[in-house]
Image 1 (spheres, rainbow, N blue to C red):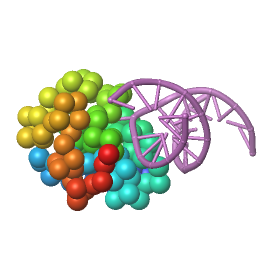
Image 2: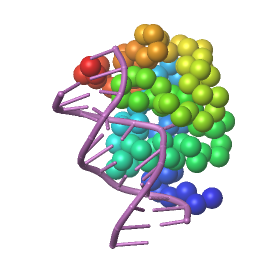
Image 3: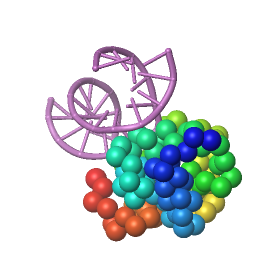
Image 4: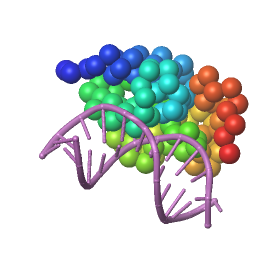
Length: 107
DNA sequence: AGCGTGACCGTAT
DNA sequence: TATACGGCCACGC
């Protein structure tokens, strides 16, 4: 596998997301040292072992789930999140469930 | 190097 | 609220 340092960091971060919490691409990028949040999406899509990487806990900054989620689509993702205790507000994830996002000033 | 594309983000209309 | 547009940067051709 050609995992770069940044990729490994991303995997570590995503794996470190506590149960009952979610994270955003923006934050994952920031925490892992990746410049562009798009790379997070790319890395997760290249992800070979979804069993060890809860990519369903990574959402967009808006609170919506990613449009092109690879493993079962948004429906499966939302279902998993609900199962883990994540609160939803319609199609959006409640901002209060975002990891380390101290009541982010999301519009 | 250039071009098109993308699991994005922010602002404008 | 919903689209549109630009910026961002890594990847493949």
